[in-house]
Amino acid sequence: MSFLCSLGSVGFSGSRSPSKAAVLALESVLPLVPVHSCRISVGCQRGVDALVRDYFHSSSSLLVFSVASGRFGSGRSAFARRSMAMVRSISPRSGCLVALPSSPSCQRGVSPSRKFFGAGSGTWGSVSFALGCGRKVLLWLPSGCLPPSWSDVEWSVSSEAPMGCWWFAVPVPAPVQLSLF
Image (cartoon, rainbow, N blue to C red; front, side, top):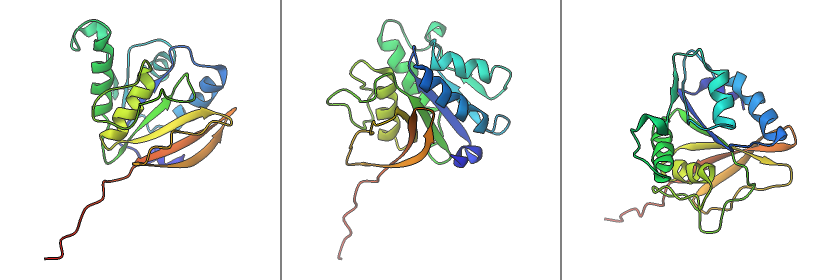
């Protein structure tokens, strides 16, 4: 997880009601983010978002994406547009989305996509969108849980965490057919 120290931008997404284990895992990661040289992006909800906002509250590099701002429209879809904007703020080259979902597995049909689709889970929607847009993802899951087996994503265990494990995902580029002529 030492790679977090060299990132240029980090986004956070997670449960509005994180488990105690998820909170401990998040608290183990926050001090690794280089607060003075890294753009930090987060949403406006309670839970994981609020913990991140509280931790980085005095940082001038903290970007809070708030539905209440009106920039993302209104209704439930405003939260999806807000999450998409937050993910887009993460550098494709030097950034990473840190995600702590409330459910250890995503809903059926969710996969990396350039459209936001979490089947009810904003965190899994953010993970799907981030990977679909070429961003790296650091995902915390409870002990014994595995990340989704998506064919266009390479997962590796990053490190053990309190009562869980951090998984690192890199989108696998689509194969390119080389021309013989």
